[in-house]
Length: 260
Image (cartoon, rainbow, N blue to C red; front, side):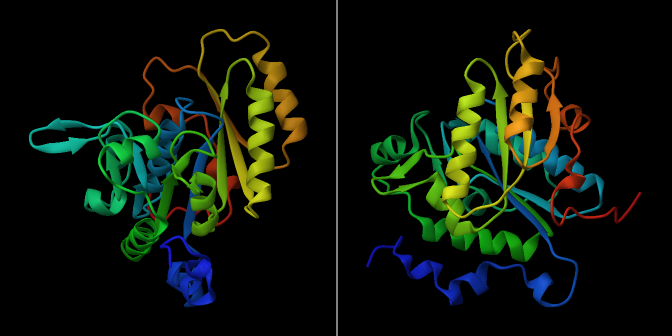
């Protein structure tokens, strides 16, 4: 039996990955899966901004990037820039083996990078790590890798992973030529997996894009989920500066302030 066999989607597994707080009658915890229209379109920036906003509300927040490709050795520890940004934005600092079960050295498509290291990316270690994070944190932001249909092994991709995590999805649209089609195709793919798109972000990835306003308007007309904000091309693209352009309160289960 494969580790990615449908068995892991059976009710007993679902019970393991559902937030305990909700079943105990406490306010439901916040979790989401952040995907994008492509690679290098700002998923990490938006995920970090979300973590920054959660921390500002007094929430124990942890970022998770289950698969990261491209790492360098610093002081005897392998680092990935995306993972480091998520860790810096959150306030729950768990072992890297939990927040990124598959940290791969080669900056290539994950299934290729994994094969170079003799590894196979499977769902079970990721789902187990997600359960551990849920037990330690009040909110979890899971960032995908690349776009929504990036292969992780021969018959398992990031869309499959999102479906098994069963999280609401936030889509980051990189504003550049072709983004309308890329965004709408991704929206269709999310729906085809039975997942709910709960919000999207327009992120300006290029300077002075022609007809940027018209592109955003076209997407707003066609995407039912709310636009959480439009992040301009920032001189200093930090979690804090990006968060100032975003309204996450439109997301389901977004927590109220717990401290000033």
